[in-house]
Every structure is written in C-alpha cells, then in structure tokens.
Length: 279
Image (tube, rainbow, N blue to C red; front, top):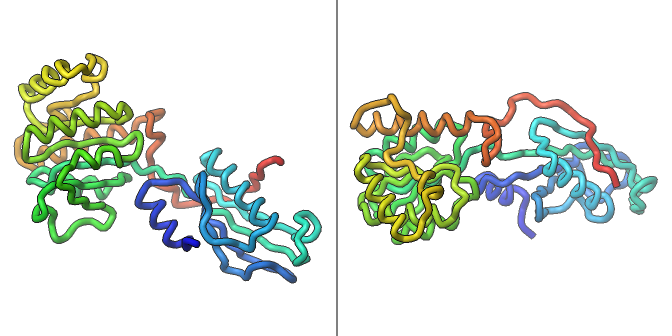
C-alpha cells in the first residue's frame, strides 16, 4: 500500500486535487489511533483510517468536497461507530478533512538557454507549476528553485503528451526545427491554455505558413503566439524578454473564468465547515 505522504508529494508535483484525512480524536474503542492519516483523490485512496463503513463514509465525504471544489473549507466530522456505522468498535471518532484544490497554473518551458534561465526563476515565484525541459545535459543551472521540475529529454516532443490538460507551453529551444516540431505537437493536443514561441514576427509568419501546409486551420493557428510576451514591454536582453513573457502569463492566471480555473494562491485562512454529502 502506498503511503499517504508519498501520495501527497505526487499530487503536489502533478497538480492533482486531494483531501487529507486525519483522525484527530478518539473516544472508546476505534480501529485506528489519533494522528492516523489517509489521502483521497478523485479515483484513488492511500493508507487507511481503519476500513469498514467509517472509511467508506470518509472517502465519500472527501470526493464530495473535491467535486464541489471546496478548497477554502476545513471540515471536522464526528462519527459514532456503533450507532450509525455498524462497526463493532463502539467508540467515537472525529475526522479532520483538509481539501487541497490545486490552483497552480501548469507551464512547460522548452529550452534552457539565456532566456529560459532568466524566465524560470521569475515563474517559480508565482502560483505556477513549472516543468523545464531541454535536450542538452549541461544546460540546467546548478541552483534551481525546488518547485521547478527539470526534465532532460533527448526528444523533448515526448514531454508534450505528458503535460497537464490546460497547460501553457513556452517554446524557446536552440533549434528552429525543434521549435516547429514542439509547436505542431502542442497544436495537435488541442487543449493548451496558451502556446508561445520565442522569435520574431517573421519566424511566426513562417511557422504559420508551414503549419497551414500541414493541415492546421486558421482557428488552430490563432492560438500560436510568436513572438510571445506582453505588448508594450520592449527589449532584447534575456531578462527583458523574460519579464515580458512573465507579464503575459500573469494576465492568464489573473483572468476569471478561464479553462484552467481561477488560478490563485491557496487561502492562508480557513474556516471549519459542516458540508456533508447526502446518501
């Protein structure tokens, strides 16, 4: 059985919603002791708070909270085991439900050149989940923010299919042919929140011409931003380009009602609620 802590790390790294359940109080006989934890996602659970109908109810409650996207609300729930759950222990258990609805915008950055090395540290300070990909072994810096997942791929296009739905893709490799291949792979996915390619207006025009010849429609090519970055922020230095791109990404996650959701930081304060799913 997988541990809840390993599952938590996996959920955080993959931007998956989850609920952490903790046994916070026990009266009388109960299947597990105080401090016992389990983690529940939309389709899996990790570790156990004792099994039986208690665990069934706890999993049901957790998935109700995930379905309702209740990220700002803790829940304390009391369970009399014998009276309502038909368990032979006969005691009472209090469970704390902590839902974590991930609001980090997933971004995959292709290329660890000068602009990539200026850009990624900026993105890492925002509510963004960054995956950084390059085909060259020696390009990633020795000191990288812990929140950034660095991926070496001899064939970076393979990483496109691994990205979270609704991701942003920032293409800035050292090779125009690779940029074009990555752009084509992202467009084929059809679910990107944003696709940006570093380069000039001329490069953007050539890419659109070539992709049009390969069967992509005008509507699909409308989603291609080349050059990328916020209009009005000028400059050719790597940090200037990085700031321009970061500003455009900030506009994406600050906009309401976008496909990837209302992407904000997790609330610092919580309230204890009493939301319980019906049978």
